[in-house]
Image 1 (spheres, each protein chain N blue to C red):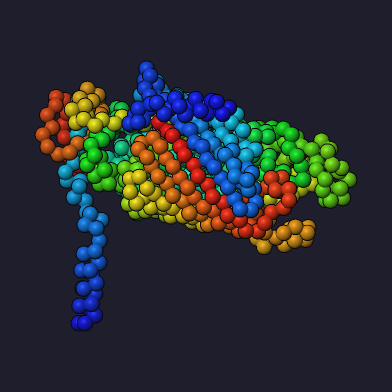
Image 2: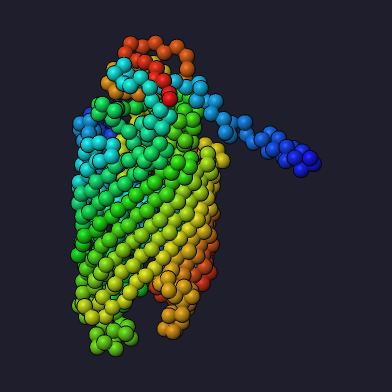
Length: 146
Length: 401
């Protein structure tokens, strides 16, 4: 019984001392994935990672896929952590490596939510992420994440 | 060349701090310029580091355009100076047409940059990595041109495997791009083989690179294999073995490196801001002088490293690296038999690095190298001989956009 208590205390101490967001995926809940009306209605978490790393450039029907980055201070880092598995600096280095070796093109970054919505609205196959809230734009829909 | 560097720096400095690139008529323009300084207490490492040296810089500028949804073209001009390597002579680093037919199959043609290990893509642009010098046991600067790029064609792609794994691959085939006398490959050969290279014949290179993004979050594994054969014209140097074969100094001979093979195995684990790396490098070739005298080369190197980003503006890292020119003689008995110090057979380095990011565009770094052995230091740069232990300090500033 003493051993069980000791293990219990250690577990409580360990979990108590970890930073609260170490294993948490809560940030993901405050982010929505949006797409142009002609995109799929849903995407998997794995596909989101592939899209934003430039690995997936076509939809299942073979039409082109493009993405833009909403470089809002809070949303950007939270999105990368929750969906791409990289920090902001790691993500930045990832794309610079493509750019300086001729293997990829730097994504477009927007700091304004309205610009993101405008781009997605006007670009077939476009995908982006935003902080949750009112998403009001023609030809833009929220994609469900499976 | 100094004026060009200054002009380039001033030009880029006046650009807006937040802009990361130019977009002129849909053409992306990116560039970087780095200036470093190295100083050592003993032994000259690449350049005259014992006196302190600023012969340590790189600069590059690239232009790329997405012509169609699937076709992209681009070119990068690059120049660098690292002691005798580069001498700031501008060269086309890569110039490629890239047709991405599907995610799992794309085609590249032109001068293609090879994916070599996990960090080969970062070796020319300082802001892409934590350390100033990559572990030289795997990313030996003198051998950069042997695998850096090729003139030819290749395929690449991304293939999901199952629900959670995926493979990135690249297969390139073409002519090696080796510049005689400023590339550094000749320095490496001349340091170990009794010849003075006068001209390289570009030879075929096949490079296969595979990366496995595993289902374990943050863990990826990789392998690079390069196969080549190259020929060079050379002059013999004064050497007892050559004399025994009746070959005098300053004689025009051929130098061949047959069945040259480079192998790199890589592993990386990323946990939030913490990155662990380990890589192994193997190099084999049959060196033949004057189609008569053979020498088998079978070297290896490896390192393990760790880095951590403490803040948006600060990162620190450390690695330990070992390199051996002849893995069957790690204690240097062969050198001892020739009356030379045994520590020419190995080089062990413990390196501590710091990196400071000042905004989007500037990076400053400082690092210390605690070195035992002198396998990768050239006798030509150290005419008074090499010491077993040395310390080197390096600093570097980079501007990129």
